[in-house]
Length: 461
Image (tube, rainbow, N blue to C red; front, side):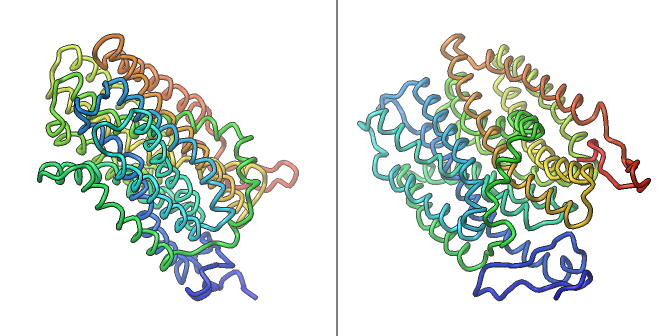
């Protein structure tokens, strides 16, 4: 038997199934939990990182598909939109997969699946290939977008509430940084005279390494397995859909701009592929690196507060982009776009930190305490993260379609930026009205028992 002050150790590495997991127990966390959680976090980041790189692979490839490929700018925006769409949709089943297969097991499977789009792209990447073939192969790359959902759901279960902002921020930031890494790799390879197939050839062994590392060093949590009903419960909760909407404004912006930035520079400012590649990685890189800081700030000051003011900053940066676009100022346009990337990354961290706090708050409001409250929060927040991540990624589809229409209608991205500015204003209003305008009491009293129950304020989530 395990007493409340003892820290049962996870089973030996050979089993890879941890029967007991109680990260909210300070003794358990300090003696055994933290070490195991961090190990799983680091190798989860590796797999998710490769997944993001493969998902955004076509944001790089389209830059080097010149006139000989026979694709118009509208074709390229359509291609990247559809890749983003698949990456968003598969996040839903990927969330369920953690409960069905276990976090470690699914990481191995999902990492291995990245070989399919990479090998397929290697086979067809040449002039003369039809647009429909490129589109089909591009759709396969969408599976890389699903790795985020399963990874976040898995890592959420490993860490205590007080550490979730940092852990989820690091996990997601390490994954997000796969976007600028593949852009930098492409820049180096093309700059050295290599072709797109060289880039694809580099990633094939990296995928194998990620799958093997997951098999050797990650674990499954028994208390997460077979809880597929959590997703249904999360889908019924209004906060899941409110946070999905807010996440469109942050992650949707990040992934949408990651796919579109280089194309906008090419089509609006006449940059060559190599000139565009020299710039496009900067925004995603800084946005990825700052995501853990967004989680840390949310841990310290409250996710809702950080998110609120972050939307203000995104609105200001977008307004500058509109001015720079109209004045045809490449330097100002590029600087403002990079700032917008940074703010989208910061907001990614703060909005995702809000999710565990919201469901912990709901657990305490129901009268649950201790491990019961923590288990309730972990269960619903983990399930909701996949749904929120899926809807948020759809924002990337909207951004690429908005750019496509803007270029078709006006010959520039200005019209799209005006729409984005309006959307950020709505995100600000929703964050304030739902999570900051009326905060829950910090210590509500159960009138039936006159017992005070500690409860989070929504301003703290």
